[in-house]
Image (cartoon, rainbow, N blue to C red; front, side, top):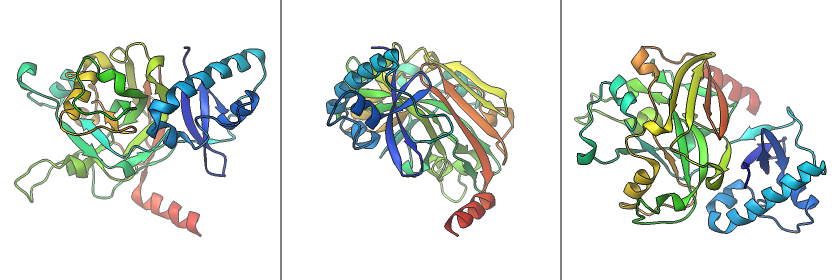
Amino acid sequence: MNWYAIASYDQGQGPQAALVLGDALYDAAAVAKACDMSEHPLQSGTQAAVEQWSCSAPKIAAMAHALQMLVARGAIKPLSLGSYKLCAPYRPRRIFGAASNYYEHAKEMGTKLAARSESAPYVFMKADTSVIASEEDVVKPDNTVKLDWEIELGVVIGRECRNVSIEHALDVVAGYTVFNDISARDLNRRSDYPFTHDWFRGKSFDTFGPMGPWLVPRDCIENPQALRMRLSVNEQMMQDDSTSGMVFNIAEQIAYLSSMLTLRPGDLIATGTPTGVGMARGVFLQPGDVMIASIDGIGSIRNRVVAASTAAASAELAIG
């Protein structure tokens, strides 16, 4: 199967599902109509498709194959650029984040890792309400001065599983997306409790989870452990590395999590970030900064940083 993805978009009437070929979006309902399909796997939206992935995946793959033939014959046209806004490809109900999961990132942060043979993945949870789409604004809270970026490969679970083995872990993956784990570094630390770290607080503000631009099914990515990842701020490259640098690979992370709890379709694992974050540089995000996070084989997301006061004023205008 050639490359394709599923996406969610809005033309002012609420989110609609689309299939993606190249950088072009094709409305899923229009594809189904062109194929004389009375029903199709995306008609209830991408959220339902992801949460029922075992059933919907083969049907979506067949629909994508039919779309490729329609495009080759010139029998269907993509959505016009500028006529829609991308939504998050779906909304994960749980987000699991892998901490210090790249050797070079751990080194730049001054984190001393135990020997891999004596360790296990370190996982935290991030609020699902942090998720935003490409081109949506990241809101900088007033109480942080150390807002940071972290490009990560997002792994979407497609099948309920418990105690899955490393050897079979990738079988439960639905697909992959780009995730930017925005972090308020100064709010990751606490002095009012004996527990010095509070990553949930520092990473769970609304808008702290840019995600997208779409979801690429597992079978469209030949080797998820060999994907180039890049993140720029104001066109200056900050992160440029590969998923090959993970301490614990994707399969090991899935096996570890499933040894504790039941993973469900739609769960997202943010698999860690490579070297190049702002904390190590002493450079932090400011209102007006623009981040572009890209992963080869998936795509790019673009997000601007705004002050909380600007976001509040925009919300008031929208309500008014």
